[in-house]
Image (tube, rainbow over all chains, first blue to last red; front, top):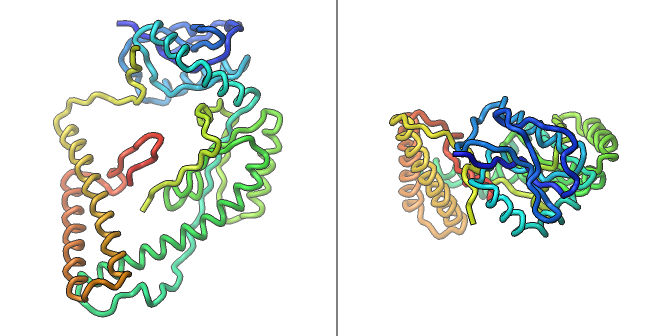
Length: 242
Length: 95
């Protein structure tokens, strides 16, 4: 049975200027509803494989469309049973989509990950030690110390994150940051940047590299605004890593 | 209105060993969550000074044994510490 695969949502008109090939070699087209449209192609209803080739193809379709207009990218493997279902979805969320399209117009996403070497062992204060006892007490004493060290780590890291983020925030419109996704990662995040400020943003990261030579910066982009489709004004998310 | 299907891609794997491991992963993740919560609670009580040394020792032994048991179970199912987690989408990860 045939369904509909969605790559993203755009404003409408205009129509797509040139043909784009989608997953499975199927043609990509716009399915309009009022002044928004879904970027779709026909597709079998079973999910597509999770491999680089297919993920890349999805990304290419999004980027091709983005060359001519703003797009709200949709997650890989979003399938609806019928075109009517797509249209109903567009009608239901038209206002939200329009607002989001305005927010991302002329803007791109820059991805940033920062790695650090967590600070070494510092002296654990006496209150964190439990006197005497057997293996059970030793175990809990050890856990208390670990907890204390983790808290210190987060404290030190948080200061760093603020110092890093402040100048970059000023070069961007919005950011979505995840703090301490793992112990080695300080931040994993995305910044929404005006197209004509991308070079300035890159320079901002270069400056950060110079200021913090012991951190490693992985900057990617420009990407379509994958992380900015939803309108949370401050998208910071704390990782709950224990 | 029709609902979207397959927004979160999943490979359908009918291999019985994989299915068992998948269940083990889920169960052990939840046990791990509980274990951490209980441990945190215990540590708070110790800091609060409301426990006797005997109570601390007894509790510690229980947690120690629990940790050892978890290690055994993980090894039995071929799971690493990093495998025990649940992606809650917009809510982040469980652990």
